[in-house]
Length: 261
Image 1: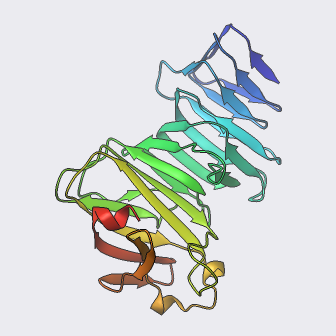
Image 2: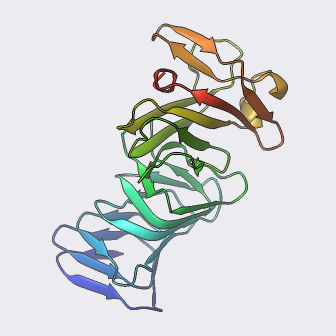
């Protein structure tokens, strides 16, 4: 275990600190990471985590379920490389990745059904997903501008805004196996979109899904649905592009009213 209770710990450039258990950077502490920190237990930052080189690296590894809480700090490079894809990494607080996310092995979730925690990054940050990996829950991109497709929960969960005044940030909450209505034949996946600011813009969206969520539907017939006036589910029939090989349905020109539902 590594518990920092008020001290200043510095990981030098080129150094690797490996912790088989938990890392807690508690109140009044400073953890300056100019190298690499690999943790097989939980990582909790409740104080100052920083870097002088903008090259800090945090890797979550090992064969167990762990929690991640980046606190108010930004982690430049975050790698999820657990022993198996059944090993969960669950957010226990908002966590910001500033430069790159390498999501290789494991299951990363923001615990979306129980909390409002967010995995956040500036739009310039790179998301690298291994095949089949996706983030369940809330992913936010900050420093938002119009006209560029940005990746969120997985490579084919992409958002582009156009026209009007662009938001300053955009958040996608993607819930696999989320049933938006009753026992109908819809794909069991729910999406919720929120943004800060922005007026008069439209949104182009790739909606991702897994084959196991088709619920007897066929991929050539898939369409996104939105809750009209908060009471009635309406399907969006055109303009739609379907990609059954990569498992997404794209739709262009979503209004701000539709986006909110």
